[in-house]
Length: 183
Ligand SMILES: NC(=O)N[C@H]1NC(=O)NC1=O
Image 1: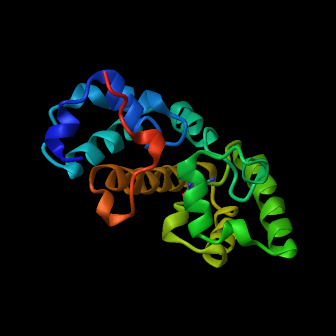
Image 2 (image 1 turned 90 degrees about the horizontal axis):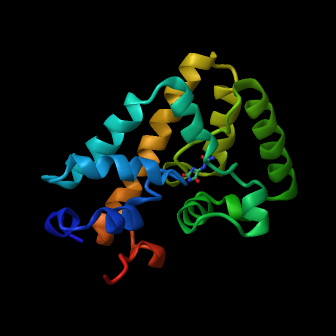
Image 3 (image 1 turned 120 degrees about the vertical axis):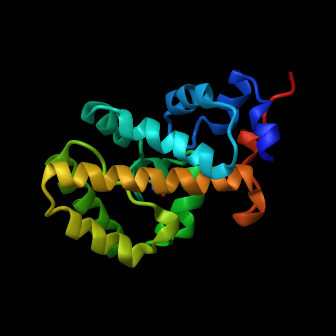
């Protein structure tokens, strides 16, 4: 899909296509639609980033809470979004050994208890070893620093999802649930 095609999408089509650019937060795409016309993919990416940055801390925490745990219950029960499943799979999180799965589950719970939102990291830019390392390291952060870091990861995930949708050759074909409906 090129920029002209993006700019021609109705509000409903735009939310259908970009509604999961931020995991389970279609409100972000709904807000960003107001920023059309976009001049480039970087312009779309900026619009998503600016909207996320403009949220109060409670809104940023809400965005984080919409993310599934890495290698968590949604993965085990098959209820991840297609985007999240592809990302977690690429990072090797669908192939954890028993000890690794237990370690990540313990650290995920400690993290959530400490910060009140799940640990979020851009899985496509990491592998299971670096994810475990960062999970332990970031547990030591203070709340404000960690909120900023985690929101930075949300924006990285969003950028890669946008690239896959607008320039699909970079990352493989867009997921079928991102095909706009025929109106
Ligand atoms: N918890 C968490 O980081 N979730 C995610 N990360 C990612 O790259 N995709 C996700 O769903």
